[in-house]
Structures are given as C-alpha cells and as structure tokens.
Image (cartoon, rainbow, N blue to C red; front, top):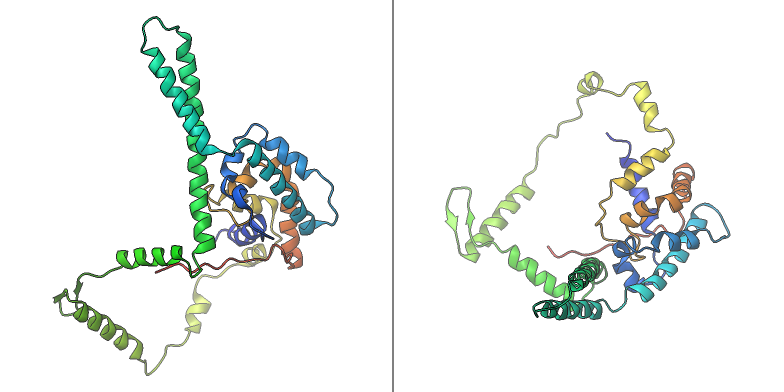
Amino acid sequence: MKMASRTHQMAGKLLTGAPEKSAGQMSRTTLTFSKHVQFQDIVKHAWQDNQRGNGMGRVWQKLKRVKQALKTLNTTAFQGVEARIKLYRQQLQDVQSSMRQPGEPTSLIETEREAKLNRKKWLNVEESIMRQKSRMQRLKLGDGNTAYFHVSLKNRLAQNRITSLTSANGNIMASSSDIEEEILGFYKKLLETCANQLPTVNHQAMRDGPRLDRGKQAHLIVPVSRDEILQALQGINDNKAPGSDGFNAIFFKKVRATVGEEITDAIQEFFLSGKLLKAINCTTVTLIPK
C-alpha cells in the first residue's frame, strides 16, 4: 500500500476547486498559459495580493484572483487563434513563392524560418484549446438531455452492438432474438441462483495470516507529510481534464514555487481538522453513455 494514495483524492478536490461560474475560454487554454513568457510573473503578482482569512479560505480567494489574471492574459495574448494561423500560413506561402524567384536575397531564409515557427506555435495553441474544449464539453454536456448526449449515446450503441454470440453449448447465434434470449437466460440463471449456506470468515486464517506490526499500524495514522502531497500531485497526468474553474495538474506543477507552500498547508489543515471549505467540497457527476 502506497501512502501517497490517501492524499490523492484530497489533492484533486482542493486543486480543482468548485466553480462559482463557468471559467469560459480560460479553462480551455490552461496548458497554453504555462508557455507564455509572462505566465510566472502574472501568477506571482496575483498570488501575492493580501487576502483576508487563512487556510483554505485564503487559498480559494487567491485562486480566484489568479483565474481573473489569466483570463486577462487570454484576452490579450491568445484571442484570434484561427486568424493568426491563417495569417502566418499566408505569410509562409508568400515567402516561399518569393524564394522561387531568381535573384531573391538570402534573408528570406530567415523570414521563412520565423514564419514556420509562428505557424507551428499557433497550431499547437489551437490543438491544446481544442483538446481541453472537447473534455470540458463532455463534462458540461455529457449528463444533460442534449443533442450532444444523444449523439454520444448513438455512437456508444453502435460500438457496443453484439453481432454474434457463442452459447454455453458452443452454438453460434447471429439473430438478435436468439442473442437476446441467450443473454437474458444467462443473467436470470445467475441472479436466481442462491446458496443454501454462505461461508463465514475463517478466524483461524485471519489470526495466522499476514498482519501489520505495530510500527506499520502507527505509520498509517501519522499526519500527511508535505512530500506525500507533492507525490500525489506529481502522480496526476498533465493532460488530465481541468475542473470547471480551469485549473489542472500542469498549472500547479508549473507554479509550485509560488503557490505550493500555502496549498500544501491547506491540504494538511484538512487532514488535521477533517473540515473542507464549502466552495471546494464539490463533486461533478457525469452520466456517460454505455
């Protein structure tokens, strides 16, 4: 048993948070922000602002300020992605057309290289936005009675269709009625079967089996350490879909030097007090078509 596992759930709840309202575009470009030259300074400036309260409440207020600052960054630096891609693609085509003409200066080689880099940069930005947008769409629309849900349901039904089935007797059935009858018969037999006598726990095996010694038992109840919390964060995939507030694992990994101390304190506070801030104690339940 790895001790880091007991912090993983709490870390996910605190780091994701509970949204007061939709984060809009910001939630779909979090992965892109970390590559911006001003990203660290913007987060540090927003985080250092004095906020009332302590512990989780203080962290929550600071996260809201960071979110607002990143929204502003999105507006100034990441708007019009499609237009920028189109612009740099056209620039690249124009430069390459000019390079085919005899007598053109060699400086066009550097211009072509810059155009390629700019196009690649904004194509990566677009890909990141679309990837996060698709995940947010599943979280927001997946459990609603929407066209998106019904399209997903139809796709799942098509994928899960059983075209043939081999019965217990070894016969291959292809008709839908035979397949349905075989499946119903199997589960009816399974659910209607009852045991006349249920086995009890073998106390002798429990006494003689492997048991934790006192040292390991005491280790299970020691306070959660800062290293455990860091290990739990590092165990979260960078591409994990963000919460509706827009913050995902890669964000907290990139800005750990700025926000890590206070967030770690807040997580340790939860394990000591057993109390979780109402704004953070939020769970999203999504109905996924089967």
